[in-house]
Length: 285
View (spheres, rainbow, N blue to C red):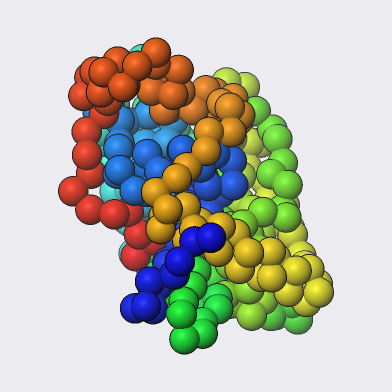
């Protein structure tokens, strides 16, 4: 039986850490306990983060009610920066490719410039108590790309996603339900920015709404409390089990080669060769 330390155990997780453990306990250990990060950042993730960063600047300007002329100057500045940004520079991607990505975001500006949802927050982090008693404190954290007022649907999150082909994300997931739980919301949007080669104007820009009932959100919370308890037990016991579900949406798990090593010595060689230790625990804010 796992003994809980006398001092109250505090566990703060975001949707990524929670999902890592649910997919594979060892993936959680490598990423959130050992803090192993790739020496060479995975380019599609870097590209998506770069696009989201420029959209955040744009939405902050909208939140501040920039004039039409000032927005126009900002959009031109952002376009030039995106076309040359190191976020989009990679040996696999030419200058034409970077210009193509910048053109898609420019098309995004054109399509949604006059959209008038009142903007509540842009990339503002939160931490909310999921459960607590005298022994434990479980905290869920996150940082929605956008929080807006949808009018009759109330406030809700908008999350930016890039995609190489059209594929809808199943909405009943830790990120979307968790954001709604934290915000006291029932409605949100996924904002897809397509990176398909057949790009024409705004044809690769689309949005999908999601909604949850209060009962569904309550179910997520109850299940998630159970998952926090499992994670706590693994942390206390220092025992993590491989799931062997190595294949995912973005290919094989980045820690796959460590797990298939034949000996602890081989594991250590691969870790030193392919990874470095992060200087800090990643948090949403």
